Image (cartoon, rainbow, N blue to C red):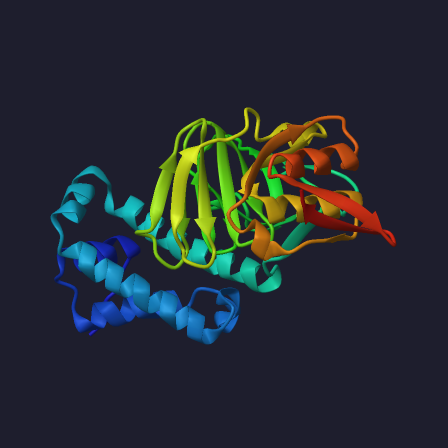
Length: 319
C-alpha cells in the first residue's frame, strides 16, 4: 500500500474539524520538525522552543473547539489559515533569534548637578530633567508600551499614542498616561513622591497594590507617601509646577526641610538645621531670578525662622 500524501491544506482542514488521526498529527509534527530553525537556536534555547511549541498546540486545540474559530473558517480559506499559522510560527522563531542575538539594552540620561537637560525619547516624547535627575529606558521602548524609570524630577510632554501607554516608574509608583503633560518629583532622599498634571489625564498606581490608585485631572497633584503607601490628591499649590523648566525654583507644597535640602543642592550650600522643628511646616513658592539668600530668607520668614552664617556653614534658627 502506498503511503498517504498530505498537504498543509488537508492537514489543517482535518485538525480544524477535530477528525485528524494519530498518523496525521504525527505528519504535522514532522512538518514542523523539518523547518530550518537550527536546532532551537532561533528560539534562544531548545527549552524555549518546546514551550512555544506546546503553547501553540494548546492554543490550536482550544480554538478548534470554539465557535469563533468556526466563523473564522467560513470567512478564510484553509490555505490562508495554514499560511497564518506558518507565519506566526516563523515570526516567533525570528523574534526569538533576534532577542538572543540582540539582547535588550538599557539607556540612561542624567542632567548632572549644574544644569537642566532636555531629552527626546524614541517616540518623540519630550522630557526636561531637573538638576540632579536621571531617566532610563530599555531598547524595547515603544513596542508594547513606553516605560521609563525616573530618579529625581522631570517634566514630561508625552507623544499621544492610544495603543502604547506611557509609564513612568519612580519609587514604588507607576504614572500611566496615553498623551499628556505632567511633572514628577521623585528624589530618592525624600519620603514623598509628587505628580502634578498640567494637561490631559493620568493614572497613578502602587506597583505592589494596583487597587491603590488615583486619577488626576489638570490642576491637581498627587502626593505618595513612600512610608505608608498612602496617595493623597489635592489642588496643585503653585500656578505653574513646570516653571523650573525655564529656570525657576519651584516648591510645590513640600515640607520645609525638603525645600531647604533642594536649595542646598541647587546652590551647593552647607546648611545645618533640625528637621524635628520643621515636621509640620510646608512651603509653596516659585522664584524666578533670585539669589539663594533671597530664596532662603523668603521660605524661612514665612515660617517664623531665619538663618545665620558661621564658619561657611548656614544655620537655621527660630526668630
